[in-house]
Length: 83
Image (cartoon, rainbow, N blue to C red; front, side):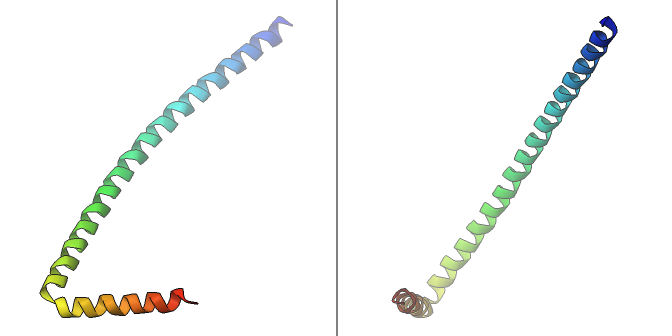
């Protein structure tokens, strides 16, 4: 019986060591994903800011076209919301 007990303890120790190693790997992967997500969010935020500035500049340069576009969009939204 002592032989089986020792083997069981060895197996349990091995499994616990493997679980600890997996936890460390998961922690590293989570940190890497967090860094990638943060970088991607910053890229998207910069692009959105650039596009907003471009839209604002275009609206200032063409106020009549902007008003016509907003009016057309409001009309379409109004027509679709009635259905």
